[in-house]
Image 1 (cartoon, one colour):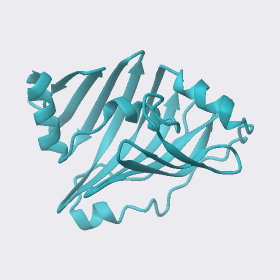
Image 2: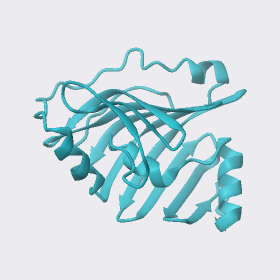
Image 3: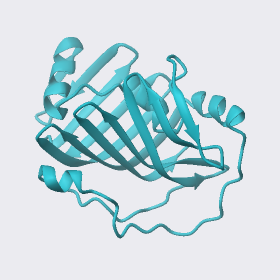
Amino acid sequence: MRNNIGCFPGAIVPLGAALALTLAGCQTVPVAPAPTVAWSVRRPTLQNLDRFDLDGRVAVAVGGQGFDAGMRWVQSGAVTRLVLSGPLGAGGVEVTANGADLSVITSSGKRLGAAAARAELTDKLGFEPPLTSIRYWVLGVPDPGAPAAVRLDSRQRLTELTQEGWRIDYTSYMPVGAEWLPRLLTLRRAGVRVRMLVNGWQL
């Protein structure tokens, strides 16, 4: 099931524009709302969901730098494949993570592993993304492997999550089958802000 949202033009933007991305003018196609399910049921169900993919856009602001990029996330078991297109050179960058193992394919097609992959990713993004935890955060649940503080709305969905030194705010959700999944979330840590807009989910 996909919900298309016409926002975030595909281009590198200056810091001021990256910080000002507010989803003005975004529209969604009306769909029937998903039912409300208790958090005690939703949380483990989504934490155990190990196969999904999503596409959308991501806007990053780090210190005095900012960019936005196309994003494709494919989760297959413990393996995360993240493709960013736009700001990191022609063709962007492709990241594959499997637990502590990390590999990066650069825009020039060069494959990097281990420490070199982490250094390349940190250099391009301006920070090292917590991929192990984000694969849960994008689903609207905490990483089950670490303590977390949560706030819920009346539909038993996260509005705020604090975990691993990050604060994640959930601004809106979309119904996907019988579930509510995040449409817009913002990750913050000292000096870093990452805004993720999901155009569509596939489960």
